[in-house]
Image (cartoon, rainbow over all chains, first blue to last red; front, side, top):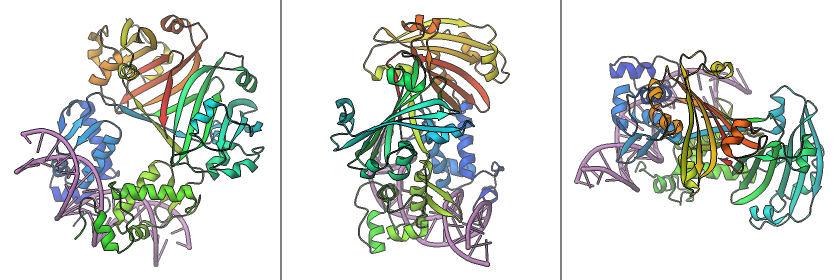
Length: 250
Length: 250
DNA sequence: AAGTGGTCTAGACCACAAT
DNA sequence: TTGTGGTCTAGACCACTTA
């Protein structure tokens, strides 16, 4: 009577309208996809205001909360913009979001089917160069670990990492001879958020030697900084050998 | 009595517990952040099951739906994994998600403060090479547009794009002399989803000439394919000059 | 069989911004 | 002032999975 888990039949019955909820997908997903379709088809034009949540709830024969869930999803994706009182508009020039997973390097390699290999190059407890130290916002002791990850015995990526020992003192005793710092940190030092920069650069001497490429050859560089609350946990520079591609979904 | 919009005072009162909802943030956000803190602090350990939604709702003095909203957000971020009946576990080796905006190239340049420039190189209506045509999954007519975007009169990115004219016939008459295909498509040809690959490559002859760099120099390449439903709208290859960095948030 | 998260409802109050 | 989305509640049924 009042709508079950899926709510589909009840909605349609209660609304006495044509059944648009025929799929097994949840109602909010169906509504979201229908909204996407209307935007793509031009039924709802760029910059125009679309019907209110209440109106859509009536149209689809569901409750306002279900419509809100669908619209929130579209807003998160940047397809629509919502304002209290102002209603929901189709984004004029939508700033779409791209998303991608950040897997463990070992799993990234395993996913290609290749055998995984790992070799630590060095660990250091020297003071960090200013360029690195600046990013740690005045953290205390730092340590550095450099290592190469192999795919099918060929160098895949060079990992050059600084770790905040004040925040993760156990790292000083980890060694990273068998387990990479990448993996160790993911398991032992959770972070709350981070940022990542990607660029194409000329391989320097170390990168060239580590990856078995010529100096000056293009390398795909990922610089990742992760934070626990407001403190930097680690800064990593990952230099990928030629052929590497990072994927994002839009 | 039954909880207003923010629900904060009511929750605390009703629960008769200490006030943990002191901020102005919505309750679900507060709960989410507290959960993040507990995970980071090790209160909730990797791989362990955390309290059920109902239990957390009791603890925080709110309704189950509010806890669910917070947990859904963490699950979307990959920090926890949820199973019906199995409960919610802290991800063992969480596959974190990185997200980034996909701005218009013009806006990307404007954001740096540099003056924006644009020059169309060519438009073609020749049959696409097999490598490109394959990605269009047997679409009919295609057209190609190549152009350079400038930042402060220096080449910033080379845009080499194929457009599905069957889906977007108006593109054939657009010209793209003043407005870039990038911009035109965003405004006129909405897409439902897409994918993007990023890599570091050696500049070929065209890239070198267009960007004013040496052949073989590293270029940051973005290959973006967008779809309307299941049909490909456009495939673009964006080759960025040295110094370009793409940013993602984690 | 039982307990979990997934979803939905109907109602409510609020903050915000357009009028 | 008014109407919109943002949030919250209390309750419910269901699907899934584990025990």
